Image 1 (spheres, protein in one colour):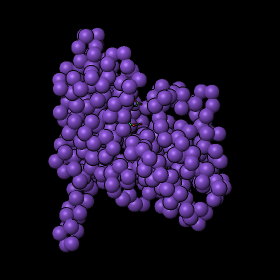
Image 2 (cartoon, rainbow, N blue to C red; image 1 turned 60 degrees about the vertical axis):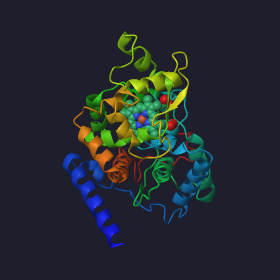
Image 3 (cartoon, protein in one colour; image 1 turned 135 degrees about the horizontal axis):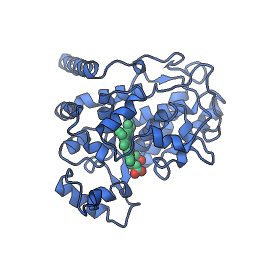
Length: 329
Ligand code: HEM
């Protein structure tokens, strides 16, 4: 028992030391005014457990659902802040933006949770918090971890524009400096780029995104030379040139587990996107080694960066509103 405690303390100190060294403290580390843990304790005591039950139900039916929910949180928070603008339906909404259309998933889980919440406590729990709670639950399930002190109190926006997804979300062809710039714009750090990219250790991607990279990189008729040749062979067998709609696991070994396999892959030239591969020789590369050598430090770091991400551009207090149906602004 004593041993375990000493070990956890050592891991904690280790995480803390490198996070504070390279993850310059930012406004995102402060609890935004109007947010707190157990936000709905008085107004809707079962808010968080209701979301958790829906996520668990979805997970029981489909082990890949945490990936959809974690990505949903990212795409919500990066575009207009964590305000559930990603869930709004209109003729030109974020859902229709190129990074999201026919790609984001998990909407039905969030809708089911919100419907249960509206039945229990009408008009109280925001869609933005439903996304955030679901992302927390998704991390717990995929990482087999316990995430404590997760904040609530975000409120919902009313604007959702497809064009914003193109200017605010990084692209799979982006290289490290561009990724860092996109994250800095949100108050996140270079380390957050490396840590949050680790989400690509779960979930799947459409072949169309990498067709050029594996078949005709920069018009050469060959694969990107940065990719491990054995991996090219595997990718080509799963992603023939004429099948852009096929979906492949981004981590081919443990695609439903939030582990450090992504970092092993990236270190071995098996990063799926150019953005993933660009971490390899970047100023953030030391973290790749840290995670592969001390795998137990990844989950706490990931949770910490997700926490920071969850504070981006939040609407709290009297700002924003509580949408009754998440798709209707
Ligand atoms: C660093 C820049 C990033 C880029 C360029 C990027 C790009 C992408 C792309 C193109 C896909 C495949 C989507 C599809 O084919 O349908 C994807 C999947 C995914 N991304 Fe990222 N991503 C980035 C960062 C992140 C972050 C920060 C997170 C979350 C913290 C995240 C979580 C995921 C997850 C979980 C999936 C799998 C989704 C699923 O299975 O439905 N990504 N990403």
